Image (cartoon, rainbow, N blue to C red; front, side, top):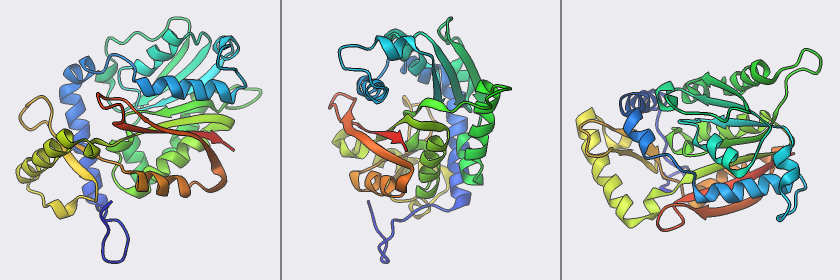
Length: 289
């Protein structure tokens, strides 16, 4: 991570963060069909995340039936075309109360959630809520509407995930707020799983990201100094003007985020997976304390 003279990492201002979020909203709205077509199957890293979730519920590696037959509540932030829901269904989870949240309903068009599940989909601009400091309240209200009970009150998530999304969250403060909000929406003893894209660790992707960022900045009339350290603008399938804001993580940044969680959670797994190289995503599995 690039550091300024005072030792802190360079980050973008709030106005630029809002502009980056608007840029991403436009990208997904206009390219939902082609993007969704490339996001049909689950990621290899999800297998270990599921294993860690089951291990947290006391299930042995060779006996998954208990957790897969027991009702569980799943919160899927930036659920997109519901492919994580399909992954869980294919893995054998039968009794699931699933709450998916996203700001691009076009991605979920044509998606078929498991018939036997209790599925709730809510539209929410997660990044805007983060920048406004309201995501924790938004998640509390959403889970109460989806899972609340007149007698016992709202139910928290047994499993909360955010896959392929952290790289779209501008600023360190907002990324940390996302992790804290996810943990607050998870029951004690529950599991939170997040992925961190590390595209700049790949030589080919890094060269492409640097080139598209220069091109996008020029087209958008922006200076590179307006972006934070690790921030890039990526293109899409050679579509003119199809820019999206993405942040590339490194190990030190993930270390810093985890250190700021204090006593709210305990990391139970941290590993790399996915992509041809097998290490394009860094995963962290947290157990809520």
